[in-house]
Structures are given as C-alpha cells and as structure tokens.
Length: 302
Image (cartoon, one colour):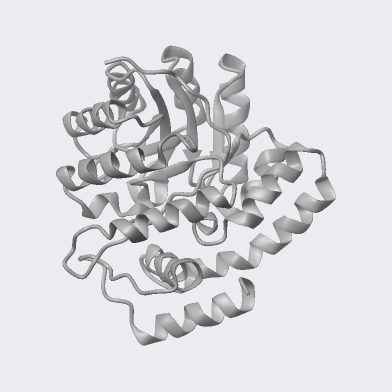
C-alpha cells in the first residue's frame, strides 16, 4: 500500500453527514452538498470530522461512507478523512482504509476519554503515521477531548514524522495558534496550521496559518473562500470586509446543542431546500430550531 504525501491549504469545510429516516446515509443529499461546496471553490473536503458525527457511527458505517464519497469526489478537490477513535487499532484500521480508498490524508483527533502524557500522545500519533503512506493531520479539540496538544508536542511530531503535515487547532486562543506556527516553523517550514473558529480565520492567516477548517463554510462557503483568496492575493481591505461578514455567522453555534444540529438545519434550508433527519443520539429538529434557523438564513444568507 503506497501513497503520496500532500500538503493542504485554504478553506476545507468539515462537512455534516446526512441521513435518511431509516438511519441509512442519504447518498443524494451528501453528494449534492459535496457538489455545492466544490462549485463554490473550496480548497478541500473533510469527511467524518466532529460535525460529521463520526463519534455516533460504527467503524463499518464510517468505512462505507468514506469509500462511497471519496470515489464520488473523484479528485476534484483534496479529501481529508477523520479517522480518530479511542482505540489505536481502530484508528490505524480506519486510516489505512482511507488510504486504500483514495483519500489524500487523514485527520486524527487525540484519544479522548482518558488523559495521556505528552510522551504517550507522541507514541500514539507516531504509531499511526508510521502505518500509512499518506498525509496525517493532527486534530486538537480540547473542548471535546479534555486536553490540548501543546505546541512543543506538535513540533516534536512534525520533526519526527514527515507525513504529519499539519494540524487543525480547534481552540479559541489565538495565542495557541501563534505558538503552534512559531514552534513548528522552527523544524518544518511546510507544516500547515489550520484555524477552526471562524472569527480567527483572518488573524490566523496574518500569522502564517495555511487556512481554516471552519464550521460556517459548510453552509456558507463563499465568504471564507473569498476571504482566503483575497488575502493570498494581497487584497487586504476586501479580506477584512469578508471577515466582518463572517463574524455574525458564528451566532449559529448558539442555536443548538450539540452545535452540528443547527449547522445541519442550515444546510437543509440554505443548500438542499429539503429536510434530512438526524440520527440517534441526536434528537429530531424541533419547530423552534427550524424557526431560528429560518430567521438566521433570512438575516445573513439571503
């Protein structure tokens, strides 16, 4: 099994996973969302991230979805696959499956539930990187894992494993992103740091980030894509204007718990134009959330 080490940049939406009433994947809806995002100019696609509900799916469901959707993308944009679990064996299995099915890279969250030492985390991520031949992106999301990956640990991994090419830093601290960029650039000029919170996209780019894997780009990709492209082209005034347009979109994160419920409903209303149900343990969308999302769409997306 051989692969190619690729770098990533730009806006990579962490897409939601869409289902039918019987709990099976809604293939047409997933394909329609994928086509929509690619048509809007995104620089990649992430399947099976947190907003993709990987934690609610079985290993086989994740494999089935990945095989079908990577084939559907058909190299139109780079594809990242979230393969993290609480099991090293399962994470390696999912990562090798992603490689075998043509993914360009995998996004690996730190093992959640238990807290581990930095040396233990180093061994964990190194073991995964050693067993695939494609790019590995680290995923730092302390809100859900209970601990943060330190800039020193990330730099150590970047220096040791050449196929660990970047990190998605889902943390509200701009200082943490700055330290990640500073520490990793000491050992790897090509190491890519991605912001996750939408209000940090522009300041992260100003500090040397490679792009963003941000939630609002799932249902409103154009502001983020245009911001990234404008910044790279030196059109800083336009980038700032787009930054200001993105800021109010973050109010969607306050409309539901878990937050992906509101994002999926925004996809239903603003992208698809029809309902797709949620899968347990996520509850059905109630009338209040539907109304709130309709107001959100009318206010910010029309």
